[in-house]
Image (cartoon, rainbow, N blue to C red; front, side, top):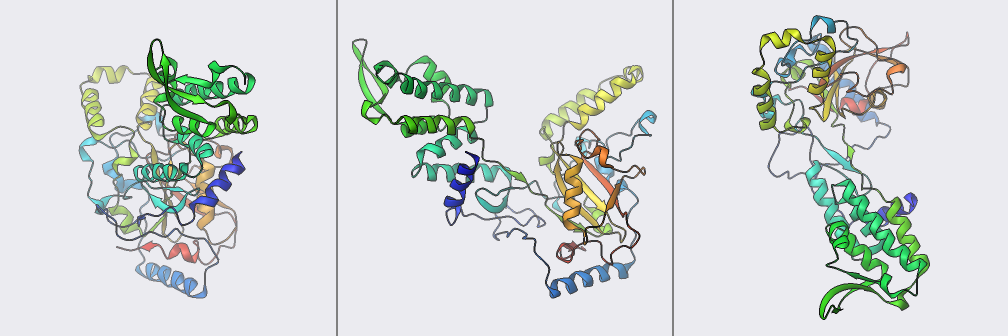
Length: 421
């Protein structure tokens, strides 16, 4: 079924999904006017190689030293770690104070959080725009293919997963009853005002299209000396194979997935030191909610703070970190260039290493080390960034494991992204 869904998108997305993309490094504007093209990884041309080397040479000529840590992110640090946490193996930046949130795009580390939807289009868009684009795409396709599209609508366009599960179970029951009892008229009629239908099916977007795809038609029929609206399945519409396929599709379908775009940036240290604030999208809570919580926390007495045990402090710290959806990872290379990417806090360390591997100039082994000298070894590959407290922003140092290091650390096409001002 997964292959069928993939083929469905491949067949329909070409030429049917259009929209404006965003240049991820540009200053935020109300209406972007330039369509953003995705970066396609391919072997660099000779011109690209020369341009990359030239960019690096210009940087090296300045002889600028990279900051030793994320000390420039003072606006992100709301409190200092307790002495018991000094030995922690992870370098991190604490939760930012709400009072210092600054929307000035010139000091934002990133302009926002962006996503891709490979099933539909190569565009890079904010999540809200993608939701609208996906909705429009599915409603366009449902006119041509109700069965599979309605299954995707049910799983994609409804937020409450428990309600979706109840709807799926009910719809499957409707169709299975017809397959198992083809001669029973009661299973071929659904009263629209029925409580079960109203509570479990009617409110779920895509459910009516699914029933229409199965063969139900809306009719007004006599009911208790009056008339009421029904969905009626005509007996001559019975196609057992079709109904079983719909049930299988509904049970196996999943929401149309979005992929977090890394929003790759290559920065010189002086520019990185200016771009220190995180955008609102990085927070799980709204700014007003964060402000209210900070005010509540500040009302606690110093005595209560002193009475906290180490376990209580660790629990409080974890709760603080869970306020973030995303984390900003910066990797400092030996030539002081910084590679930056955006990650979900629940992604694993392995994803960070794969991100670095995608952009370095050769396949040689390397190490990632935090500011305290702790290496992110293989034993931590399957741990999440939140587990290791690499949230909401962290600086890692890159080091080659081999003795002979390449002349350039980053690929030429990645170096073309180098920002200097």
